[in-house]
Each structure stands twice: as C-alpha cells, then as structure tokens.
Length: 285
Image 1 (cartoon, rainbow, N blue to C red):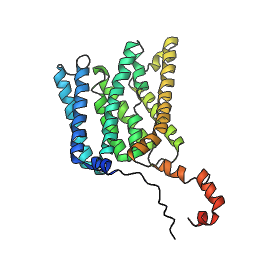
Image 2: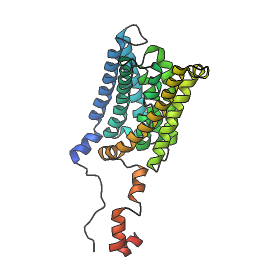
Image 3: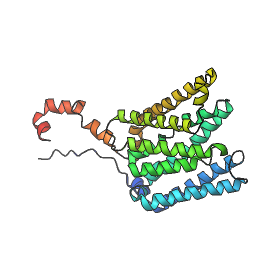
C-alpha cells in the first residue's frame, strides 16, 4: 500500500509559474536590461568614454545589450523559455558591469595604483556562476558579454587590456568548472583565473617585472602586492560563488551536480538514519 508520501519537489505556484513563462514579462525584462545598460553607459560617458558624445556611448550600450538579448533568445532556448533564468543571466551581466565601474572608481578615489585594477576585478565571478548553474555554453556567452559591457565603463586607455584579460580569465574559468562535482574544484578554477590575470597583466606590462629585476625595491613591493592580489581575488571569487550556489539554486529552482553528489553522500544524516531504521529499504532503493 502506498504511504501517500511524495518525492520532494520545488513548490510550483500557478501564478509564479505563469509569470515565469509569460512572453510579456520576458519582453519587459529584455527592454529593462537594454535600458539599464544604456543608462549606465550614459552616466559613465560624461567622464570617461571612448566617444566624444555621451549619447553615442549610451547608444553603443543599448546596441551591445540588444545583441546579447538576441543571442540569448535565439541560441540559448532552454534559458530564454524561463523568465527566472533570464533574470539570472541578464541580471548577472548588468551587475558585473556595475561592479567593474565601482571598483574602478574606488581605486581612483583612494589613489591606488592603476595596475591593481586588472587583478582586483573578479573577472571570473559571473561566468563561473552561469557556467555552474546553466552549463558551459551559457558560461561562454557570459564571458563574451561581461567583457563587452565592462569595456563601456572602463577608462579608454585600459579598454583593450580589460577585454583581453576578461575574455581569457572567463574562458579559463568556464573550462575549469566544466562538469564540476566538488566545491574544491571551484577553488581550483578561481586560482587558475587569478594566475591567468596575473600572467596577462605581466604580458601587457601593467606589472613592471623588468623594474623589479633591475633592483627597484618599491617596484618589487608593488609587483609582489599585485601578484598576491591576483591570486587572492581568484580564490575569494571562488569562495563567494561556493557560498552563493545554495541560495541561487533555491531562488531559481536549479540543481547542480555538486548538490546532487552532496545529497547522495552515504554519510548524509538522513541516509545513515535510513540505513539504521530501514535497512531493507536502504539496500533496495
């Protein structure tokens, strides 16, 4: 006889489910994203931008955002069919853009060395979240567009270096978290991202290694500080993603391989209790 118990599933409120699938809500989210990117680009254009007119910067932002929406809607159909996942992807891109601008302003306001910008920006944050939760293709999409959108709010002389470092760090991260099954693998991905940012900053001469070799103590101190900042940023980013995953999984009704393996751990308290109180059921389930 059936006990009447059911497998635990996400509660599906009919109103919430209808909003999650609504085409009108989806169109509103797309418009809101494009307008938000345009407004951020417009505000930055008044001080730092590669265009002469702020309106041109805003227009460029809207065009880039519109291409992101078009690609997301046509290629990533599994994401585009759920409005909650659209919020996760497009909200992540907009948040990353705002974070890049905030870090740049903070460094300028405190008179910190400009080269620290390229190791303190968590390039891998948004691509790592999207790759773990939604898969590698969405992670690659995120990598490309955090680089493009971030270039709108970075200083003109740093745009090319920013885009190059952002793309490489994002791709390294997405590849490192492919089919990730343990949280420690996130730390490894963060470390790889930090190393990539450090090596590229050296290649683009944002870190003066030659001056350090020639004996400049202040240059050596700054180079060492920058190297530690690069590795530290990567590790902190991975720890942040690891902590955010349970919240994001519950909010957007997603389940990662990490969570499945943790739930299937034979040392889990509920499984151990089942083994003791109902060994027959445990061994035949």
